[in-house]
Amino acid sequence: MGWPEDQAFLAEHFSKIITTATTARAKLTRWDKASSKVGFDAVIAEAKAGQARLAAIVPPAPAPAPAPAPTPTPAPIPKPPAPGTVYPTAPAGAIRINAGTSVQEQINAQSDGTAFILVGRHERQVIWPKRGTAIYSEGGVLDGMGMAGSCVYPTADDVTLSGITVQGYKPGAQVGAVAAGTHEDVRFRWRLDNVLVTLNDGLGIRIGSQMLVTRCKTIRNGQMGIGGVGDDTVIEDHETAWNNPDMAYDPGWEAGGSKFVLTNRLKVRRSFAHHNNGPGWWNDIENRDVLYEDDLSEDNMELGYFHEISYSAIFRRCISRRNGFGMMRWAYGAGFLIAHSSDVQVHDSTSEDDWNGISCIQQPRGNDGAGAPYQLRNVEVRNNTIIRTKPMQPDSSGNGANLAGVSMEGDLAGYDRNIRYNANTYRVADKAARLWTFHNQRMTWAEWRAAGQDTTGTLV
Image 1 (cartoon, rainbow, N blue to C red):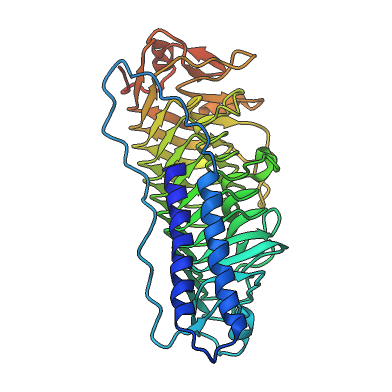
Image 2: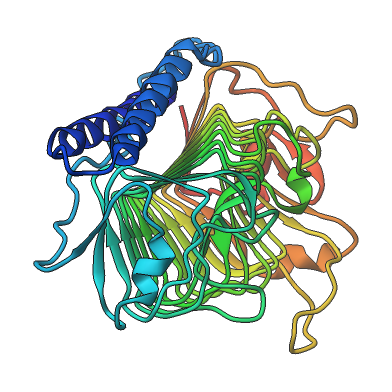
């Protein structure tokens, strides 16, 4: 999924705003205030202007199509999730909040657990939800118009947001235009369904604990799409794309599609990261029991999937394509990179035309909270397909552009910590090339297997 789908999704939102505002205006009577008519007219005009601006945007040039593979490709790659179009229905008795009305005043006037329906466009609104606050809509917009800070703050648990667009806020780095937590505290059981978070200066969505993010999009946010700290959070059918568009943030620090820190039991399913200036999917600092399943990562400047100074994780039936070409050094710029982490599995997944395919590395990274060093240990890479349809150039030191490899910096004992590649299939035109790395040496297929890797693997 790329710009055409994004453009259609945004166009649909503008169209719904116009329809909703036009219908509401037609219901006004002659006793209604003239300012109400003017307000609706302004909403309609702004939405039409948004349609015009959207139509004038020139999409980025698509990545060139790779040359045909010399051998048949494996089973078709699943398509990314389609934009969600079915909105959950607000419960009976939900309170309508019309354009021009203060959202926060409506929340303050009601008890915990109240449901609302957001109608039309709401500018420069800031929301401090109560416990159980639920805001539903079918295309309603919360537009910060460049105001500093978040749109929705982490002031309560059990918050629901559905069918809305959040845009134009300036939360800054790591904070979140929609924030279910902070560095010091997280909220529980938030649900985001069919929420578009776009064009915010900073982070789009910051997660909390026991949170569900489903059928949402984080598009063209200034720093990053989605990230944060939390336990037992599920992200599914999500799209994060075109984030950090102006390179205002260093991807080596935190920028791009996502970054999750200190999570437990995070699950990311059927989600799509693409065209981010940074990694697509990134776990950094003591994440445990992570699951990525049926995900897709394409055309990101840096890594497709990055598991760094963390612990147990599974990547299964995941796909990475054309990632890493802004990070062409050593073993980085990979489709999948397991870095200084332990107890990780990558299986039944695909890397196609990434600068590096599936890499494992060890560098000195200090100690974890318990005082133990971060180590590459107990990693299994099995039953994957790594495809190279065109030649790749190594970096200036002659490193990289590998299909697979294990690289160590300083701690060469790491080669004996149970790092195993098994039963992987490699599809490459030049079968004599040195496209594997072990013991810091570039190897041929025969040398890679003689080193004990992929003894049941296949080169086709």
